[in-house]
Image (cartoon, rainbow, N blue to C red; front, side):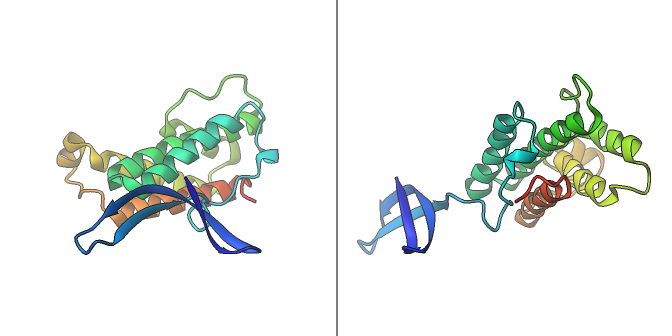
Length: 174
């Protein structure tokens, strides 16, 4: 069920995730924002290849869903997946390649560098790289091997904001 909070001309939609009666007898309601406002920018679907919109939207929805209820590593993993979806579909349009989609994020970081040069798209590559570097911290073997600290809530929040930055850099944000 959805709940609208605010006034008729200014409101936000929320999804009711759970209700429970607490010890005092009151009802505790857990809500999730239906909008990505303040978390991820709204997509400008007109800038995305029509065949790619659905996949990109699904990846971003998984990020939003995980951001509200999963552990930090899951949020980072979903951000990495969404970053791959965004950058691969964007590069597909930028390069005109027939089949650039099935590659890892590291490949796309290098591909952006090759396509645009060392001095261009540095911020985009850096945001992609940051998300890519957070990913192995949740893998016990990798974290132990490289003596990496565990992913924290702040790292997950950073990954979500970096994803929003990526959407703005490729001009897919409204």
